[in-house]
Image 1 (tube, rainbow, N blue to C red):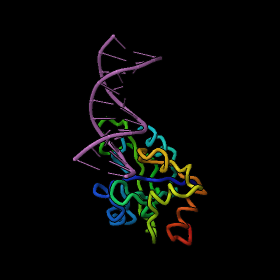
Image 2: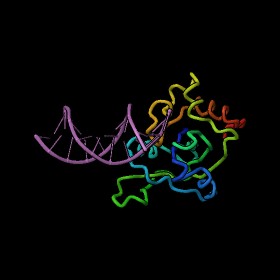
Image 3: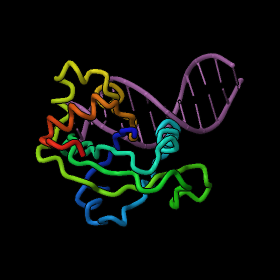
Image 4: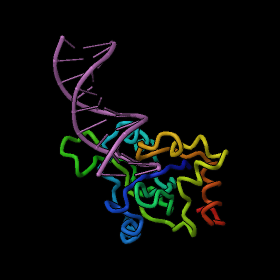
Length: 141
DNA sequence: GCCAACGTTGGC
DNA sequence: GCCAACGTTGGC
């Protein structure tokens, strides 16, 4: 299984809104970036991801699961863009902030620490475990 | 609200 | 195919 990170401005689409969708989930639409699209195409059902709040909060706040593989983005009439469907799995008991990620030498290679603009990012197994631990998730979600 | 960084677009 | 201009993102 692979791990990812999904970034959203909480005023546009927050983790609370994602949770409100329950197990039905929600498509992760609106992504208009080729790199991000390619990552979504590489995802398989059951992959896990962090939910990151940008701008306001600037922290990893929850865990989501991929429940549908990449399909055409319903908000894109041209058919160029794709998205996966996600459902909320768990809150991080303690949000892990961008500052904490940047301050940790072992997380220096996280895409989040370097290329802050990419809205869908890959996360390594080790990064996943570390951020879960920092966030107070004893049982890796 | 500002500005730097990045990705995309379009002219050549 | 290159590169300058532009728009957008996101941290501060």
